[in-house]
Length: 446
Image (cartoon, rainbow, N blue to C red):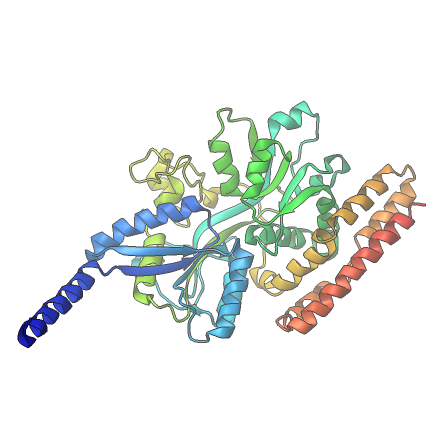
């Protein structure tokens, strides 16, 4: 081959690869999300279609998850320690207000103001809890409530008590019958425990959490395991976020088998949020995704049946509440979710600032006192309720529910809890405290 032919051939080959690359280039979006695969599939499908309509281009979406909201937040924080300007992830999709407020405070979220018309359709708050950030760093993408689901068929057969509030879960007849998740892994589990603390106060709330934890069969890493355990009869009662419960109910042939209760002693309806991460590599596309999720088209995916032409395709639907009040009237009976803006339940005055001020300390405190030494806790709880001496039982329960720090001390400690040396020191102290109090409680029965 002559020199000129070789050069010409190389030019043609180069042009071919450049043209091929342009033709096959795909826009991209990287999302970290604790959401279950059904939500990922539906918003992937919906956004791909919407994006093609808007731009004429295709898009590839990568979904990441570290195992739950708490794990995702830890991962994000750790990555920003390594990579100050950006962590090659565009969005965080899913998680409670507390977590997003914390990330915003740390400077890890990018502000994006929705188009004015969309913003006007959003309420600023839900019973005092912000629906979106005043600086537009995060938005509530859906609304969530937290309650107790139970297997009514088995509860009735076993003649176990009905549960209508959180405190009912402390009944010693329920030992090994309750399902719960580890707040160090699950954001919705953390939210449930924080709601109980805010509803009852630090000391009384932890007393309930301690006795409740003693009835738990075992703490799962993710809250998505709990509905499955309730349906299978592994546990009779499960502490769950609403859409997991409603999803399980929707798949039952007997609509009365699985039931769900919002405890009136401490009820909260709170946003489940979305935000663009600092240094997002595909920021403009990330903004478009937020716009889509907050649009009527995106919000309908939460509310509609899987048989509705504008609804989700996944069996059973998504069964989540929209943040758009007007959408409920517009859809009418097409919506499978009741309008939370017209709820007759009186929620507690939840304080997201307080919640975000002690997140890590609360998770680790529960881990050290109630989860890592769960066998010792259950052993002590069983011993307490075998005793026939009421005074000794009450004394032992009082010891069982002791805490190594006050509420104000927990908030102060949170400010220093990124120091791993200090954190590990506290974990050892709390673990020793738990061991000692369990022994002391059993000794009080003698």
